[in-house]
Image 1 (tube, one colour):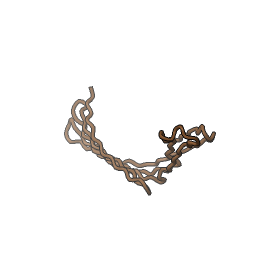
Image 2 (cartoon, rainbow, N blue to C red; image 1 turned 180 degrees about the vertical axis):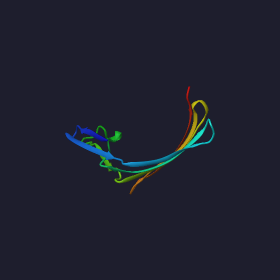
Image 3 (tube, helix red, strand yellow; image 1 turned 90 degrees about the horizontal axis):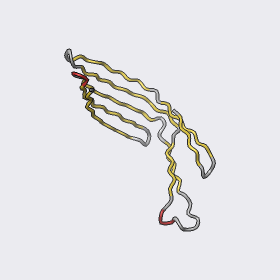
Image 4 (spheres, rainbow, N blue to C red; image 1 turned 60 degrees about the vertical axis):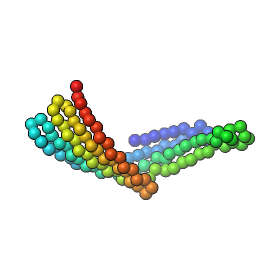
Length: 122
């Protein structure tokens, strides 16, 4: 996946990329004739040249001479290790319940997320 941005103040062009090879392993386990569990785990690594870039100005100094913009740039950790796991219960008439975990870990990054969802097909 690639991204590009145009910096109007400097007339330069920055291009970033991210590549995330990953492996997911899972299994469907029948519980009865009408319900099943799906369990899975995944792991991957993201290599990236992406950077967060923010430009701002201090509102209190807006009318002062020489009020330069404030530019902050922070590179995203590369490599960034991504992991995940999930458990899904699929039941009668398309009703399902899922619980998922996703994490990302790097030199300066530590992210953990847990989510749950209820699916009702109609």
